[in-house]
Image (cartoon, rainbow, N blue to C red; front, side, top):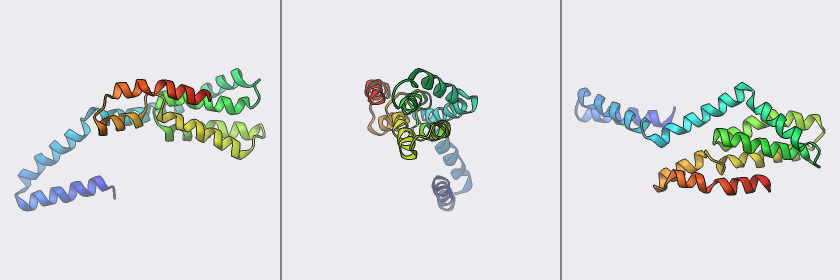
Length: 169
């Protein structure tokens, strides 16, 4: 049972018990609207949907193939391409988990095909997945900005250079 719906049901039952049904229905409607209309909450599912669209459209495979062609000549080029593609996908989805999951399905079979050590392959995907927290648009920065009442725009701008430095490292 999702906790949010369970708490909403208990609150609705409590207000109905203390007053009446006509008083409880507007409270539920207003609360659901206020929570769902809060702007920072609305961007989170949109970033996740954007990542899903990018994965379904084949953009992730194209992104990975592009970095692979650019960096294949370097030692460990496929691993470096994985990090680069993770950074590119993180700039689209804003989610570390979505980046690691999507790029894992693209990069791991390719790295396995070229006889990379499985620990190195999964380490590259895991390290590249963490870039989703720093490279804007970052869901982590949005949630942090909401909780601390800081400027989300400034947080996103502040994460750009550290995210690119981490990807380059």
